[in-house]
Length: 182
Image (tube, rainbow, N blue to C red; front, top):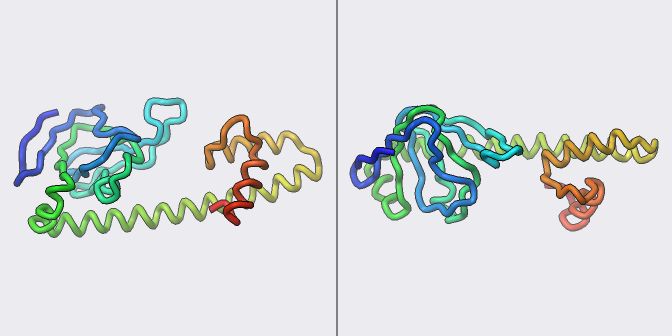
């Protein structure tokens, strides 16, 4: 990675294939994409790897949630092409906002869009789980073990249920303590 500076913020020239940050790592910075494409992945380089989405619009932000809440990174960011990024630290963020109001608006728009997408994903997942529960009830009544296995695969994917816990037990337990799945 090559580093320059823009008003106190490092400007990073990131080669294709470089991991920008890793899921679970501490976070005190965010990035603005100036050029290139970045992929955000869950479980990067594991059999469960899943690409959440790609960011390629100049001015788009990534890693901003950790900057605000100091929580570990939720995903791994990987340069899918050569990229230019501005790295903004928590300490320099107020100065960045004052100096770059147009970028600040884009950060807010990015957060809003991602929040809307997350809500839609929860709604879709909730519908799938409700359909699975209905199918499981029917399968239990008819003693269809093959449907149980399909339910397990779907619920493992959606809910990350441990392999040694039957999905119906997990769902029942979660429903008792939380009222609903989500």
